[in-house]
Image (cartoon, rainbow, N blue to C red):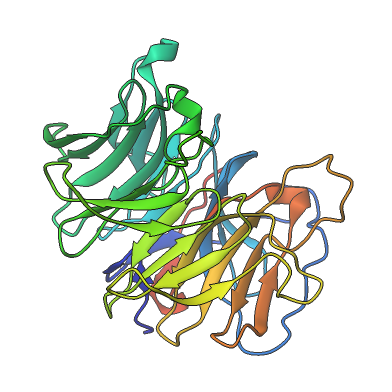
Length: 325
């Protein structure tokens, strides 16, 4: 089994209960961009603009599907084999049969904020980022108790323009970005704070940070959203690796969203693309090497539309079982 580093933490995943959907259950997929070299991946995906969470098999087909009613900016498998995902007004954990296990919900009023980030921790708790007034990073146990409540000070008042994916590091700190462009440039940083909310350091980005993840060597990998970039920083917040908008041949970066560093050193990222921009659609998910060579891509707009989050899953941990619709 591969060792995969998800959101800065190494998890052992086990999930029984996936089977292929019938050919009649969904429209035929759009052509899959072929693998250029290397192997494909089984993965869990979701997205803003895609009312589904899906597991993709090694041939690019839908192996498991959960229909949701709202945008999903974050989704993953947990240690105990459940599916954790976000929707605009909350975060939810379900079994593979769709039975609820855990839920956090913000109030329905506009001032209640939005939820675009949920991260499972090894102890069973969940880190939820609540974009509101003020925005907060919450750690919640499985009984619904809030065990950490970090207020983030920002001039941004629009809930939709605050957080995307927020991550707790193995060191117990938190990494977050701010989405709205501000006059003083507070959006042009990835922030790292401790459990009290004290600012420890920042990492410079061109426009904003969709997510930052702590790597096993202490480096920090950042997806730059509409800044069209992916940046890796060392322990001193010095830039050591970067992909800019037009470095990948015929594959410009649009809005770089969810990403993951694999144990082989490659990076998998989501290239989120809204429609109506007069440009050809590009692969939704790409794997790239350290020397910026594309080894694998995925594209399936017919069934999944605009993806914004991805989790690579080792194919050896999945067993046959019922699918959701």
